[in-house]
Image 1 (cartoon, rainbow, N blue to C red):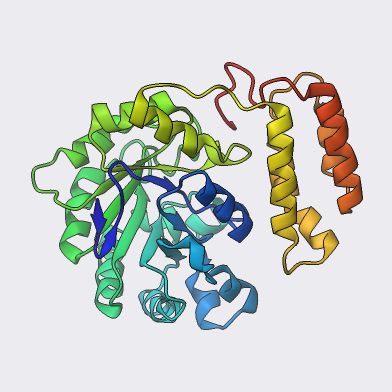
Image 2 (image 1 turned 90 degrees about the horizontal axis):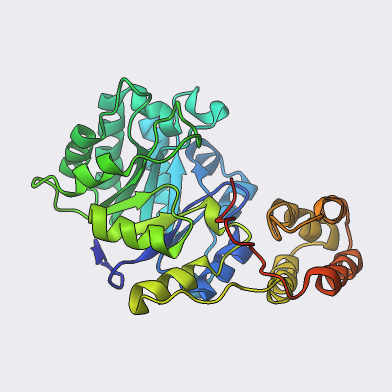
Length: 337
């Protein structure tokens, strides 16, 4: 599969951009387990052009992360164009435009999925960014704003006409947020539209190898993007790839193996950060790691309160001692809600 000049393997597995989740340590961890393409956390265009240091840091790329894309969001065309030019200087492999984020503070201000309420502006913005950068430009969006405006089939054609190199579709409307099941039928309709010739990437509810295979086989997508299901379970990419290649399911990872992974994640998060910042940055993952273990609530609360490496290590030792031989994700618990 090709996205502009970016060459990916057959049936690529892509890590979705997620705010406060897909930082460099988590991306590198997922890369180890076979992710074929990754993105930055989504980056506010206005913050980029104002030279906000914390925002610029989100665009920094480790050499081993390629192929890698920087995802931008905003509501002003001029800001998106200028931020794309700045992002280009960080040497990503592509620029992605976020027209899918449903959170209120973004969408209700006209950015992210909020752009779905002004399709002419969305299309005009996309075309302007495509013209402003030499990099391949991709778009991530949703089916539409709400149940009455599922316009993705028509929108996909319009976006393709602007010159984008690929399109990612999350199978929900903005109004759905992350509730209910993702509707892959419309994703499949876009992919099977004879007018479409760019890669179509499907996103939404891919939390098992079986669902990933179904997305490829039933709906014909060129790639799948995985987000929330990988939080606390980065080996999901390895399990999916193995199943796609062999038709066999790998045995579940044990809690003991998971703890080893968590220790590595903590160590990676500590690079370039103070101890307290590193531990606090892990809390978003501690809330999901070991999800579904019996009688784990008290230990999880402690993990969310500690602020030193020593305290984290002690709790991880206790977890191994009590739950070490159990599956890290018990049967029937396919991923984060």
